[in-house]
Length: 543
Image (cartoon, rainbow, N blue to C red; front, side):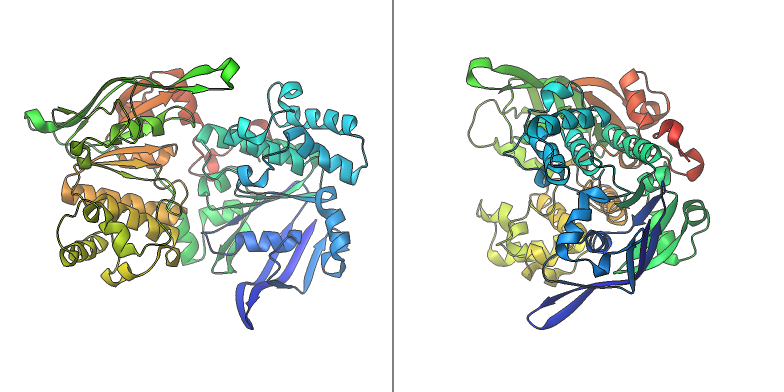
């Protein structure tokens, strides 16, 4: 179905040519799912866009052979290539929110495919859009077809992109990180949908991902990329059972594997052993138009405590209230009711205004390392800012402290003079960790700190947090939808659903002996660790 031989892509700028991918060979057969696996920057998306013909204008594409079935894509004009897209080949982009037009309804966007390629009228195209929404599992498609992208969750938006991509039943579907940053339950739904569709339509799928669990579950063959080239390729069973290349072995070893539960040493019976106690914490939001406002309980009566040196994992789907809870504890959000007590002092923020001074002992690490750092500031000023705004110390002492913290998080002190865009995602997250440690906090609140990172970088950041905790005696609230990471890092786990506290317990009890149905469903959605376990997320269509 797809034949690629000797594909090379580079970018030309100011008479300078920078290669991005070189000498790529791959095939996709009807009904087959081929996984393109690798870290960010390995060239996966550049390869996919070159195949689709939607590369950057500055890109230079060359290949010995690039064929879709019997058609040579290299010989086609831009107009002929455009007619193929949607008809015979389609692509699902990674970021569904930015890929959808915010000012058009979902029905208009899906219907456009039929109006352009099939010359359908608006009413007929709308009817087909409703059928597709039903196929991809959107409930009440007759009413939701008139909704806008912002009215859907992340998983639903991803389903809508898939509906647009399969509208004309293409032979080839390229899915670029379709499950990145999605909850495990939504990820399982998307994988099941892709698996179902390729079986139903005999469609070849090229799946781009850095998630080894996803590849373990659905791939027939695996192509491993690094630095713009193919490191290893072959049958998925063979690659997982007997990887030939050191990089492949390193990549597979980076996937989180269950380890013995972390056991916190018996606490010293002192009053300050519990550093944080939250009691009946609540927060609601008003939504909807002025004439029909609704009150939604984002956090509804949460109780928790955190001991010195302990990591409490908070898990749940998007919309469960995890981030709102974290922001109230840190003081970035006001509370409607309940108490946040830090070292015996009530620091609950109930009105707008400055944070209570005591809250400087609780610092936050944000989810996105790309947007949480000011691009106009040097790393030195970003990390030193918590002391600079309070005029603590001298410029020289703050600079020395920055150097000390950079070394603590595994970076060189002279990197403080660079800007954020000069670092990788993992390095930026290390800078964010260094900034959070500037005020010598007792507690770190980590809000999805590894969800946007590659699996190898995830492992490095998790190891770094564990090492810093052991060295500094920190307590950590670790919020994540990646249950495999939580299992390896946390001592205890709190499960949230629709703002409520479903279950709390030790890691071993939550993962091995869950008491609630929701917790069991959450755990059942974790991607398999080995090829022998595959099939639990894709049901009867599993290979």
